[in-house]
Length: 478
Image (cartoon, rainbow, N blue to C red; front, side, top):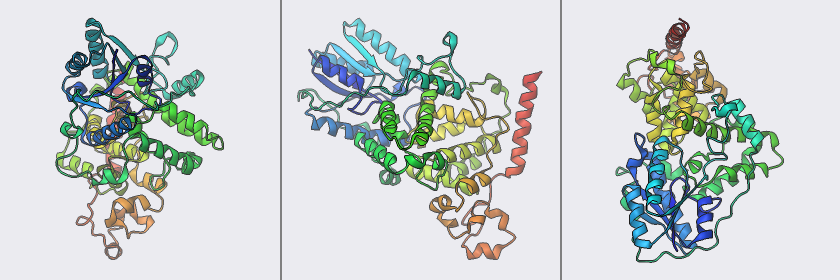
């Protein structure tokens, strides 16, 4: 008897419960089905599609080394699975669960239809430490604040046993057709992906290598350097986690094995659990990708979006160096440091007062780690309308943030070479030095020409944002 193993966001061989159980039962045919429509309102963004292409290639190579291969199909998942069942005579289908609202609905429908055909369907958790419904408050109520959720998850236990990768897999008959991965057309038609190729190695081996580097070089100082975009202070494992090239159980065990750094280990694992919290919220509040969790924000006076200003924010041409550096890092590499994500999002939602969903859509298309749960949580947190949100009066000052977390200006100089010659005490606020044009000219900076003037007055826009939030607060109290 044969089983189908349906790969989705679990593109790895180690600690893959669906793979382990499928191999225990029957000869296995690994399958990937490209079904863009299954994403609903959130199909894969451009950067994610790039990563997926290379991750699928890496998975196919890994399977090949074990004697197997990846069968790739394109179309509605249910139709493809039924066709594969007819071709192979498979009687069982295994997959690891996903938790986006559209995925949950799609999976439930497919499971029912396959079972109606007499097939056995078994599903597993490979993406999270705990299912979103397992960690709840009294009365099975969901958490809306991170700290008690973190404590509850700690009490349940972070360490869990791992499953080994197989050392050998049964061959897949040559008669079973597979599409070349290139025919999925995941790569950009215009070659803008040079920066992604330069900075990332998609695939399970790339994930494990990055984890090893993080443990050896960065974990010890994580607690003090994690907010510094000018330093190599974070793991950069987020895209590997998003595509399931590594799982959280593997990371927890590896971090706990780094015994000399218990304080840094706990600090890092707390950040990892924010990802769990994001999935918890998305599961319990499935409307939040497009609507604020705090329903009272339905009356918030967002500003009308100015397309010119929005384009300046997207391109990293706001005239505010710390923000521009982050947006250019995003465009070049498909990733942005978390501290800078908060600052850039604050400028959009607080200073420009544009709806948070405008920024969430842009990040969705440009981030290689664009997960619906994390993206939604992050944007609503900064905008002040989500769970455990930043207080409405918390408006990140990008100048002060830059001076604090990029004190020598190294991060800005790297991504904004036109400002590279400015001294550290000028580089985060060059417009304040327009009274000294000679000094700016010596540094090769001509504001308004080779670097823009700010598109928004930080002081006045902050006052306007506070007034808007205060009016909402007064409305809530009446």
